[in-house]
Structure formats: structure tokens, C-alpha cells
Image (cartoon, rainbow over all chains, first blue to last red; front, side):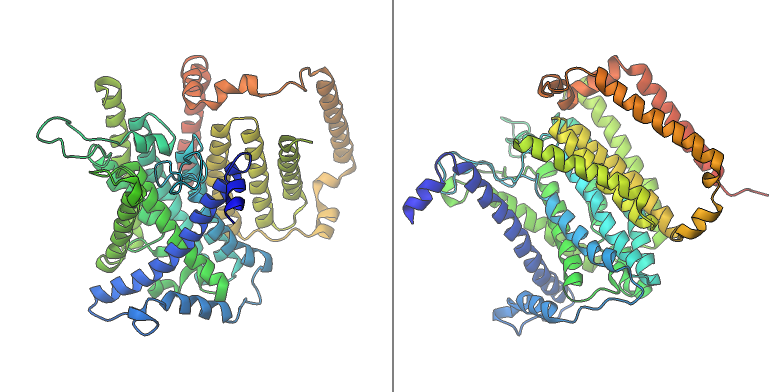
Length: 360
Length: 175
């Protein structure tokens, strides 16, 4: 066994095995995150509404997601007669594939040797593209196809309305999202997420009384962070921007006609998208794996910081959902176009001037 | 055959088949999806040419933004499936004169493509030498804002004119 590991972890195989490890970590990790999020969502909701939430399956209801998944697996697969068979099956696949793909360029930790398993330290990132920020943006814009096609292929008015609302919403908020990304790119002077995170190492005002403030971009870019957070919530179709599936108006929106695993795929895609947006926010604004103090490598290293920040942002997602009521549709549109976009543009121009003239 | 060549032929096949399906497909929604597949094939080719920035921009702008609007329009207008028999009988393109002129144009196009290919040199040269400048976003930006400044500004004016025109055309008449 150990000789196998030695063979696989030495050249010329070590690149492949490391790559395999990282891909499995990300793939399985995202799946696990989706399951944990389902549980957390129900528990947090219950807490905020002074209920118990799931508590029967396993200790404290911890195995509830497993029971849910088993149930979804064995449910009957229904398809409306008038639906477009091919696109009806394709839509959830596009959704979930885009969700997984979007995580590929996101770094979630400093290079590590996996506690000495590998000879060379490898970065905790599936693919280190030098235009990572743009790749995330591009893949996010692909996710809308899954929803639109699901709405159209179901051949039902609620689904179609949900799909159309979603595309209108995503197109409107993508602009503000892109502007916020561009501002950070300009501030960090790099399109690579890894470089952006590394630029956030250390502290502001080092050596003064305020030297404890970590060098995170959320402090100079608080407007950008606000815009990014709003647009991120809208992009993932979560409350208070969950119009594509507004229950009172559209039954369940674009996935009204879906059941069983096809529904589960949309469900999974939604949670994975939340994780992705939170991870991008962590990398861009909260310093990624750099914390106020260093966690030594024996205790796991920087990715612990990353996980803590990610968990906090995901909690904020749930918090928002159970605190804020849904906007009206016209409010959503005017907020996106008349508040967020001008705000992001002004922030972009100010940052550009700051970088150019004051060398921020 | 190296892995690069294999990837090239895969992406090229996706692009060509996608582009063909756009025309062959009877259902307009499927046509839109085929052209998205073709764009992805093109993006793959750009990556092989060591221009990841161009590839990603291609996906963001064409596959992401423009095709969503196409899909929107096709779905909302509910364009019917094309009926081949009806098409054969009534379409103006099937008038004998139109067919003849079209055929001449098609032959000319094929000849010119062959002629251009026969004159092109350096087909076997690797792309990596010239690709450096394009792969760096910074250099691309510098070239765009110095050497090609005029073309860049003219393009942006054109786009603004088109936008204003669209708003004017789509606006409700006040009477």
C-alpha cells in the first residue's frame, strides 16, 4: 500500500494524483456543502421562527439530508406530456454542471503538501487560470440557460413566467456584479484570484495604533462589497430576490413541473451557487485564507480561515431569507438598474481615479 | 497525433457541427442552443491558441449575453417550427433565378476560400510565438487604447447609436 502511494506521488504521476485529489475534494466537498446547507437552512429557519426543525432522523436530525436524498432518488419521475423531452432533461444538467464548473477557478487555501503526502506543495484550487475572475463571471452567465430552458421546456405558464423572470433578473444584476468584480480587479491589478487573495495579506496602517485591521478589500471597497452581495443574492435567486420561484405567484416557478432527481439537481445547483458566490466574496473582499492571525500548518493552515468566512457568509444568506420579505418585481428592477448599477459605476470610477492618481 | 491536435479536432468538430445544426434544425430554440455549442467550440479553439482572455470574453459576450436575448425573443414570439413542404412551395428563395444566383455565389465563395488557403503561408508554424501579446490582458488593453484607439472609439460610438436607436424604436408613442 505504501509503495503504491510512493509510486503515485512521485514523478511522473504526482501531478495527476494531486490533480485527482483536488478535483475529488472540490466535487465531493460541494456535494457535502449542498447537503449541509439543506440541513442548516431548515435548522436556521426553525430557530428564527421558534420551532424545532428536523429532529427525528439521527441525532438532532443530522441525517435529515440523507433521508431527503433517498426520498428524491426513489420518487417517480414525472414529465408533462406536452414538454420538450430533450430540453426538459437537459435543463437541470446545465444548471448543476454550471454550478460545479464555477467553483473550478476559485482558490481556497495556500499551497499545501497534504500533511507531507506530496513532494511538491500544490495550490488548493482546481484550475489556476490567469483570467479566473472572468471565468467565474462567464460560467455564472451560463447558469441562466438551465433556468430559462427549464421554464420553456416544461410547457407550463408558471414555469415559463418563472424562467423569464429569472433571466430578466440575472441579466439586470449581472451588470452590477461585473462592475463590482472589475473594481476589485482594478484595485488588485490582477485578474487571477490567487494574486488577488495574496494582495490581501497583512494589515492596513501597519505599525500604527490601527495596525490590527487586516488588509482585506472589504474596507476600502465597502460599496463594492455591498453591490456584490446584493447582486450575488439576486444571481442565486435567493430571498429577498427569489422571484423565479415566488411561491404565492408562480407555484414553484421554473421547476414547477420537475420531480425526483431532476428537481434535486436544481435544488443542488441553487445551494452550490450560494457556496460559489460566498467563496468568491471571501476571496475578493474578505482576504480568502488570510486571517487576522496565522493558523499553523499542523492545525490545517489557512483554509480553516476560508471555511470560517465561507460559513459566515452562507449563514448571512439564510439570515437574509428569513428576515427580509420578498421585494415587488418593479422594486427589484428599479433597485438593480437605478441604485446598484449607478453605485457600482461611481465606485468603479472613484477606484480608477484613486489607483491612477493616489496609487492606492 | 498529439493531445493538442486531438483537442483541436474535437473543438473544430463541435464548432462546425454546431454551426451546421443552427441551419438544419427546424425548431428555432434548438438552433439557438446549437449556436451556443458552436461558440463554446470556438472558445476552446481560442484557449488552444493560448488566448484564454479572448475565449472567456467570447463566452461572456456571445454565449452569455447575446444568446440569452436571442433565446428570450425566440421563446416569447413562439416562433413555429418550420414546415419543409410549405417552405419548398412558397419561399421566394426557391424561384429559379434566385437559385442560379445563389449557386454562382456559393461556387465563388468556395473558389476564393481555396485560393486564399493556397496563398496562405506559415500554416505549420506554431502559434505560441505570436500569442504572447494577446494572452496578456494588460498588453491587449495597451494596444487597444494606443494603436487601435480610433477603431475602438468608433466602435463604441456605433454601439451607443445602436442603443439609442433601439430605445427610440421601442419607446411608446405619446399621443
